[in-house]
Image (cartoon, rainbow, N blue to C red; front, side):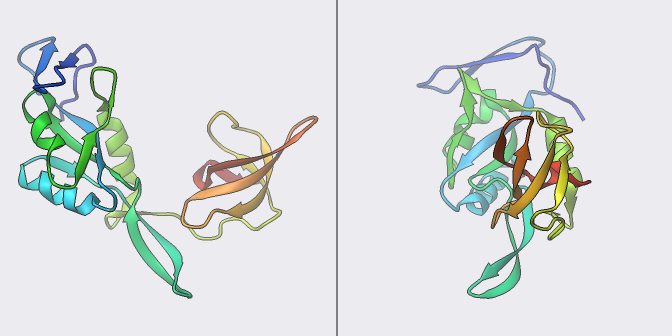
Length: 192
């Protein structure tokens, strides 16, 4: 597995989408990028890019939702409207940007933003049978919890509710002289 070298800078000409790369000439320039898709067109974009021979990763989430009054398990994109694609930006950028179902390649500054291979592997590592699953009802309303990660790590809070259709939880955070309601990913919260 080769990773993109961090010393490489890619500059794009907005009219021709031709890249100039700086760095060593003999290394694999295929890197992971975030691709924005058209509304509800993740599968179309995925198939279109696959036909072009581009490696695509569309992380999915499997969760229980209420549909038409009945509870059922659904599978949907983990990041609605986005997917990951591994390609050589200097030669395949235009093909990716104009593929069916693709809105654009996410960019910051002068070119597309590279996603580190370790992030892709971490997301893939959480998938079970092709989709990420979160345990249902880990907490009950009013339960004391502790935040396990992130900038609020170590703080105690009270679980208020799980947001419908997401893996996020609303917590009532108590500090020395104030209370605040925060919304965090459920996986960052643990029982006390």
